[in-house]
Amino acid sequence: MTTGNAGEAPGAGVRASSMLNTRRRMRELETLAEGGEIDLLVIGGGVTGVGVALDAASRGLSVVLAEAHDLAFGTSRWSSKLVHGGLRYLASGDLAVARESAVERHLLMTRIAPHLVRPLPQLLPFVEGVSFRQRTIGSIGFLLGDGLRRIAGTPGAVLPRPHRASAGEAVAMFPAVSRSGLRGGMVAADGQLIDDARLVTAIARTAAAHGATILTRTRVTDVGGDGATLEDALGGGSVRVRARVVVNAAGVWAGQLDTDIRLRPSRGTHIVLDAAALGNPTAALTVPHPGSISRYVFALPTQLGRVIVGLTDVDAPGLIPDVPSPTGDEIDFLLATLSRALERPLSRSDVRGSFAGLRPLVESGADDSTADISRRHRVEVSSNGSVSILGGKLTTYRAMAKDAVDLACRHAGLDDPGCRTDRLPLVGAPGSPVPIADPVASRRSSATLRSRYGAEAAAVLAASGSGGAERVADGIQVIRAEVAFAVRTEGALDADDVLDRRTRIGLVPEDRAAAAGVVSEVVAETLAEWG
Image 1 (cartoon, helix red, strand yellow):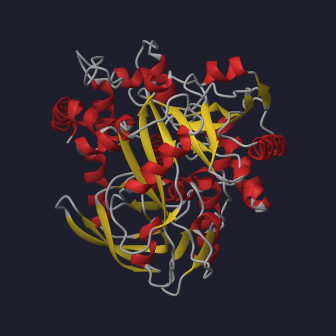
Image 2 (image 1 turned 135 degrees about the vertical axis):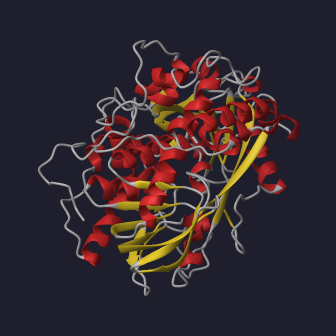
Image 3 (image 1 turned 90 degrees about the vertical axis):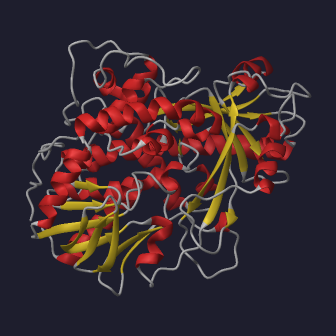
């Protein structure tokens, strides 16, 4: 079943609402139960899976995506929230991945999701804790990274060029930086997501607007090349879905669906600090690992008045947990490394929260550390006939999805008008063909809402009645209307979905506890109306 046309303008295939909610979910499960064959079944609701769903649906293919938990439940919500330009891969000699990263960053910042990605200055401080060799190599790396920016065609107005910072400028950008021997530093810019989970949600909704069926709380069993059984975890029974091709985009869980797959998960740990404790920095601090010229710890200012510090890269063998846990040693390593460049050393008492994610690295058979394993993705047809997409990273999700759908179309003999996601803005982005959910006459909205929802900021305010502009808890910049919008439009099915993925309040346990009551109340009210 194909409906696309290679000559259509970007977005011409939009044919459904982008709203994800329980009403739509129930209706689409009923449609699946009626039988019939679809073109493509996607397993996994992380950034890669929803990217595959959008790519395929925008080509005009009929698509169903099944996710066992919630959108961005796994690795996709545990990243550093950066859209990398590929400098790390250039340093390791992986030129193809470096260039691909720079190109995909360019597309995200200029066409696909400029409302969700901002330029973030990164300061390499010239302090006593950073050696002359580390300063020199780091500065050269920043300049090489600017070369990648130019190759990708990203304007300097979008990503400013690197420059040398004075000591005063360094302190102004990151007030907590050490004054001991401070000789300024080097500043370069990279892309930063307002939130990785929000990007996943926007991609999923854009896919839904192109006709894709997006089903969360739907576990997949009996996977084969011609379909799978979908089990509704909310008590709706099960249905066998016949598909011309199946794409396994389950990330670190991909091997549980296909015994051919061999992955070597790597754990990346972050800690969460109060931005106020670091002087409310406006730039990220980049601190080399002790004795290293290629690995760094980053302190990244982010939403809700927090700074996230990461990250580690260690082997994580054994069973794959639903929610990975940081180790004490990893937390101490991050604190100690960052403290080398700070005026006041940090301690465990400064940590407000912590989180860890597992990278789905492809097993190479070598004894190299996980930090040395290539981040190049791989697509292949398994012996069971399904297509697997393995490895990769968040920044290059679109390129990964393109390669997976290209292979799926060839493997299944599907009519293929070609990929169009390189010119398709996501919902909320300027120029997006996806209609805004619940548009309202007033266009007034706060800068905070615009940074999280783009063109839909006013629609968020309209998603709740009186009191919708009230915060869910003192000191937390999330309002009741955002909770209602998450349920009505973004596929949230319970309070955990809102706290831990749609808003990220849950990154700090104390904040989660403070907001849980109001969030649960608004979720219940909205489900009663929209359930």
